[in-house]
Image 1 (cartoon, rainbow over the protein chains, first blue to last red):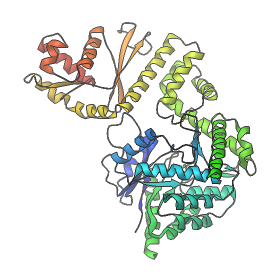
Image 2: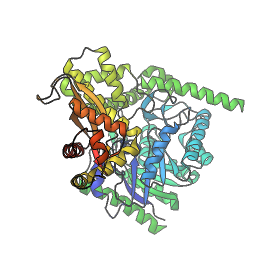
Image 3: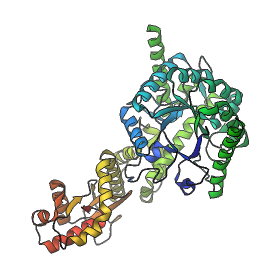
Image 4: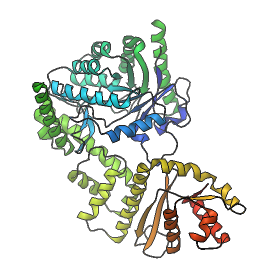
Length: 275
Length: 252
């Protein structure tokens, strides 16, 4: 079955959300959580698949997320008919009453982190019930000392909790560039452990000063990421439920918005036809 | 089991320490935990990026205040260097903490204090709506039919008057945000209309009407006119029309 394909909704891409190539939408929770908003976030669109993407579940924190935050997330999911919620494999705070870092940091890949993360995901899945939870691999600027690889850590979480994998193809590409591993091998290693999959696609840039690929969501999706996406679809077979393109800066014109989602659709069509 | 608990306790200590250090950009405390080359540079890229993002968000949210301060961004940078972001800080909460912090450490002019009051009232409207979302949505769905029902006030006395449930009061002491016709100090009511926030400068009589409507809850026009407004139906119709027109009341 072909995945549903769409954009992470931004005000700038709302005019093309009726493109025939697009039948899914991702809601970034922090954008939708506007207390004065009256209409539902996806307005009157009727997508085949909607997912709510969160930033502050902080699944790798020592404490589970606050119920009040999950309730707010759930209300947006229910209001918009979402089939899934997702967040990142990282931590953004110390504890519930503590401080917020501002952006998620990767956990150290250790047994201690694994135990806390799996427990937190169990709490999240119990709370959301039939609304499926997907865990996203993140792009990171640094990594903590650990006792296992990121792929091994992620596989053990997926197997232990049964949650879905939000495979951010660009994040794998960025980490491969910045930490020197083979992106395709990473996806090949993790994919068999994922019960089902969503995917993210985005474009960043290579920063010459730091010699790092920065996942800034500010550029068109680069060709190596399109190639990885094709390979990931081949590997995921019928496990991929949805693909979302993210863009947060340097927004394209209408043609640009339509072109990327159509390319994502075309590749999915081609992979489906071969399968 | 005991070993597993010990492992998780160790992890808790590590993450609490690293998260607090990253939140305050105390990068050297994180560096020993980080693998690979250029650890210091990479951690600095991370904390610098987080600081820049927080500055951007605060500037964006507090854009109206920048007109009242000579170097507003430096105040935001100072605040960020002293006060870390709190867990789950979102929407107006960080800007509200900034606005509480600002007058404590800086001598503000009366004009600047009015700008602070204005923004804090706007924040209060948002926080009030977040806590009473159902009431906010119900009112906003009801409000658009006010024009049709206002004309029915002529013939039917059984129209209900609903006060906008989301409100915040502020007092301005200068004309910096007011028309010159206003009387100082001016009591200003902030309330949402859709996803916009409107203001009304109310005279004591207007404030009394709003407060009485708040106390009685939704009320039928024929009951409200003599009790709340203490006026004749013709004048009461005019008051209801005005309240509904600005979005402070809905008719149902």
